Structure formats: structure tokens, C-alpha cells
Length: 591
Image 1 (cartoon, rainbow, N blue to C red):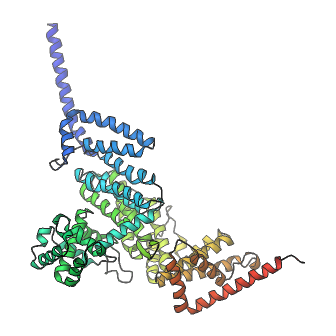
Image 2: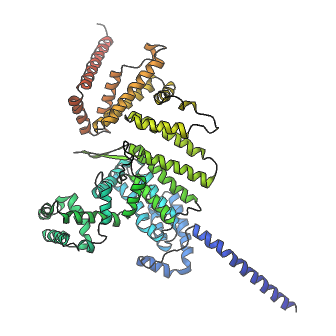
Image 3: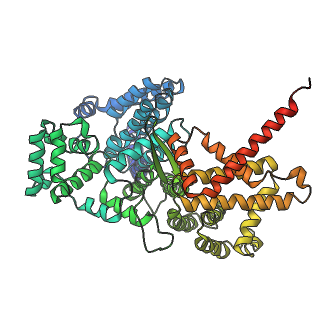
């Protein structure tokens, strides 16, 4: 009887345990989905090594992966990045659904291994940075399309590693990316060009259904055997257009014979589109959507928009961030990973506004110099997205997102000065009206009195506040750096920006003299504006950061187009030389 009772009790306890475990399954499945541990697609097209490892190790895969993961993390802590790379490669083979390992592996290559290489070898550093983002883009995301952390990590490499200035050779990264993209899209493509790319055939077979295109390819193959392999035809064609010296003269003669023909244009569009899809993994239709949603807006005509600058790393970051939100986002939950991805788009837009124009300046002997300039046409879209972010944070987090609103206010104030400085006074006035209406009250509810004055008074007051906290040396440095930036813009034929910086330097000079010179003009007064202008010119001409041909061309342009400025610079040079001679004579000892 006692044994029967025990058996019945055990059965009841066992049944209760099974029921309790079954009730936990929904929560466990939800947690697995949130951690990205659920396989949503099959591994039918996986590499043979991955398929073998998946089947052969069976249930022991998890144990082996844990051991390898612990070892890889320890190696990273010890600075043995190359050893950690090999272990991470094994882990991604054994556990391709483990997004954190792909993230670790890509970060290790793009950040740790790249900086372990001396900065005297920028091409080697770039190779490891490229390995990092290609791992995520080409291998990790196709196996884990619903893991938003992978999209965020890929976008972060473009935004921070390539787009920022933390790496010693960041300019080399920017140059390589810009050159690669311009070879496919040109320097400033229009929206119609992207439409033609999207309409281009998706396969080589489809492209060759056009008889004239087929005839062109046949002529190319007869001219050079390098074009015989269809698998390499697109790459070889693009190489021919960029580096014709690598191929026979007959091959380039074919290009000349077919130049301006519809067949050449059709195949050229197909080749560019195919490269964007196969190598860069771009969805051209999605690129067009981003161009329409985030593309630059003409300052004088808001109805006129342009494509994004795809030669800039910020645009690549925005593409993969937006793609992550599109494919793997959960708007109703707004998880931490989704917030971080959202912020990448937000900061990419700011990056494109502040330094979104990539200038490649060719030097005959020193190679290509890279400069980043503000893209003021990005203001409207950046401003609109900022307001959308404020509304989104209010909806999901409740209340008043003070930090975001404060950042928006600072953004508008800085943009106001930038547009005024560049001569776009009408746009500056629009921004000032927005400040007056949207940021009329501070966080405590009081009216901001600084916006109750005319725009010019506000700008001068802001400059005056900055000048009151600096001394004569800081003011001199500010004026000279502003003038030097003006020379740089003038060398790039950015005449409006150059004139704006010259006017700003003059206003700061006059304001400082007015505020500080009253007390004791001789004691705290600045050097003359002509002397400061000459000092800025010397600093620009002697700065090796600017290509030598750029500096020489600037001097020639000033001599021809601004003879008055050239004469003043010559006068300052003569005066400075005379002053130096007088000082030397005064310092000579008496005999």
C-alpha cells in the first residue's frame, strides 16, 4: 500500500513537472528569438565544411563552441588577435547562428588586427578593415538575416572605423572607399542614373539578349582573350574602363569604336549594377528609396533633391542601419539593438551634414589627398529626421526627451552660423525662425530671451560670448584659422564659402577690437587684419597637409583673380622683412 502511494505520488509530481516545463516553452522560445538563437532559414546552400560540421558533431557542437569561445575571448584579452581570429573562424563554422561570434570576429579584424599593423602600411590596415565588414556583409548576414546586431555592427564599422578620425590612416580608408564607389557611380550621379541602374538586366544572359550588346561583347572577346571567361566578364570590362593599360590596344579600340552607342551604354549600366549587387551587396531599389528619403535638398529650391553621396562611409552606414531596421526591426518592441541601429542612421545624417563632401585632390607624385567638407544641402533632411527622433522618443519613452531637444537646439544654432558664414542669409533666417518657434522655452518653461533679438544681433552676441572667454592669443588663432580655411576653400573654387570665412574673420576682428581694445588698445589690441591675413596665408602655404600643387594653384589664382589681395600680401611681406631687419640691427652688439 505504501509502495503504491509512493508510485502514485511520483507520477503526480512527474506529470506536474512536465506540465510546468511545457508551460515554460513559450517563454524559452521567446528568449531564444530575442537572443538570435533561432534558425529561421535552412542551411541548404551552406559551404561543405559548414554542412559537415553541423551534422558530424551533433549535440557536442555546443560544448565545443563554449570551450572555443572562452579560449578566443582569453586570447583577445592577451592581445593575441591573430590566434583569436582562427578560433573565431572555427566557431562561426560550428555555430553559424551565433551572431555574437560573427560580431566578435569582424570587430577583431577591423579594429584589433588592423591597428596591430604599422601605420606606414595603410594598404594592409585597409585590407583587414575590409575583411571585417565583408565578413559581416557577405557571410554573417546571409546566414542570420534577422539578427539586427549584425547590421548595426556592419554600419558601425563604416561610420566609426572608416568615417571617423580615430585611426591614424583614416584618410586612406576614405580614399579607397570613395575611389571604389566613384568607379561605379561617378562623382555626382543624378536620380535618373539610379533609375537606369535599377532597370538594368539582373543577369549576363538577360543583358546578352540584346543583339547589339551581344555583338559588342563578341567584338571585345575577339580583341582580347581576357574577356573569354563569362564568369569574369563584368570584372574585366570594368577594369578595362578604369585601367586600359592592363589590356591589349585592340580591346580599348573596341571601346572607341562603340563609344556613344546604345549597346555600350546598356552593357556599361549592366556591369555597374551587377558589381553593386554582387560585390557590395546593394539592393539598388533600396538605394533609390534612401535617396528619396534622405537625399540632399537644394538650398534655394526645396523641391529639388539629389542622391546621397555613396562615396562617403556615412551613407554606407546609413544603408546597412536602415536595412537592419527594415529586415530585422520590431517597431512595436523598440529593443536596445534597434535603438542603437536607429542612432547610427541619425549620426550618419549628422556626419553627412558636417563633413559629407569627399574631395579627392590628385597629386602627381604624392598620390591622392582626401578632404571632407560640409554638405549643407543635407541640413533639411537632417533637421527633419531629428524632429522625427524627438517624436519617436516621446512615443516610446514618454515625457519630454530633454537631451534630444537640447541637441536639436545646438544643431540649429551651429547650422545658423554655418549658413550665415557661407553667405546663405535667407536660409539662416529660416533656421532662426525655427529656433524662435520650436525652442522658445527652455527646460524649465521660461522664455529664451536670446531669441528675441534680430538674427544678426543673435549671431554677434554668440560670437561676443565666445570672445569674452578667450585672450588675445586665442582670438588671433581663431581669426588666422578662419582665414586659412578661407584660403583652402578658395583653392577648391568654393568661392562663396571662402568669402564667408573672410567676412567672419573680419567681424570677429572688429568685435574683439571693439570689446577689448577699449580698455587698452596698445596692450590687448590684435595685429592688423592685413597682418593676420598674411599670417594665415603663410600657414596655408607652408602646411604639408595640403598638396603642393593646391598651394601653388592658390597663389596663381590670387595673383590673377584677386590682384588687390595679392598686393596686400606683398606689402605685408615687405613690411615684415623690414621689421626683421630693424630688429636684427638693434640686436647687433656695439663695437
